[in-house]
Length: 240
Image (cartoon, rainbow, N blue to C red; front, side):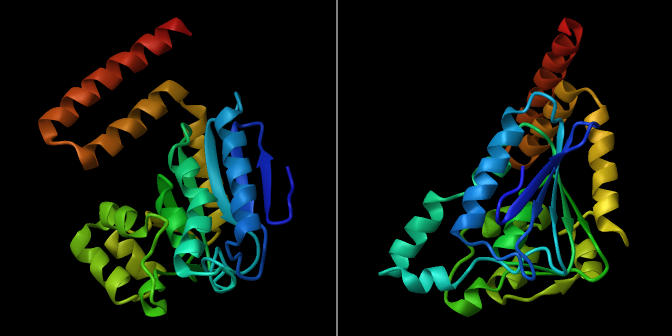
């Protein structure tokens, strides 16, 4: 699948690779968002896809949203409404398949927010990550305040959100914004996704749900959820 702004390839290992293909900055405009929605829905519905890699062509992962689209709307509220109605972030978050982001160069604003909705984030040594929205008179609105705080804690997220401070790959790894630094980030992300795809998909889905529940639930409720998901995964495996 090839469109103007993205590419999607499906490997025989069960890994789908969705590539932002609008260099040099891979800015999210309405066209890219529509194409991402189409791609994520295709991944969701594909019977053979068991993991997703979100990658990017060119020097940078993404410098964020196309601010010119805000200026073309009659009001800021109209611009926000248009943006929220063309939302690829929720389809990514709700994918049943585990997701891996391969980050390099600039990963800013909506680009960082997209990667934060992935289960695993790999970064190249040259990656620069940040949420510049507050310096532009806006609030991150693609989940950044929530996903970053969940990843690294509200206290650690304050500088990124309120002061719009960028971090390099080493600092991002130290704070837990990314999970690993790799010289060949695309190959590393694909390798991780391939390992995930080789495992029992029912078990992977259950593990993912259990980990997400750990953020939202008290420990006692999380332990009950873990036992329930483990039982369901065993039953699913027995039925196959």
